[in-house]
Length: 174
Image (cartoon, rainbow, N blue to C red):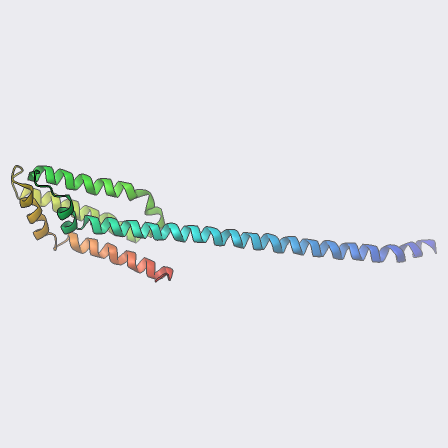
């Protein structure tokens, strides 16, 4: 008899304890899930911010290396064609290397178009420089670059910029 009385006394205590443990576990699991979601949201915002900065920087890079912009911005009166060629290629290389780490935030196809645009502009500069003597004033080379730019270099820059715009549209930002 005495053992039945002990069971009747202990049974509610055990049931309440088990029920309390289940509630505590549920609460802790719920809090952990909530914190995990908050962490993912915070990181998602950080990554989104980084991606947008990458798109911004590569857009600026492409605008800066477009042949007309590049020549008009970098050409100096005291340069000859050889010095302008060297200066333009160095400017492209420096700006590209400055933004190189941001490639991890852009899609692979956009990155390839950016690299192609850089290559086309560099190729245009080198091709135009072969067509003028190295010691002529820099404006001769600059004129030649701008005249020849429409065929490939401007098209490559435009395609890369369009790809960046599509990527941003896919993010649902605009």
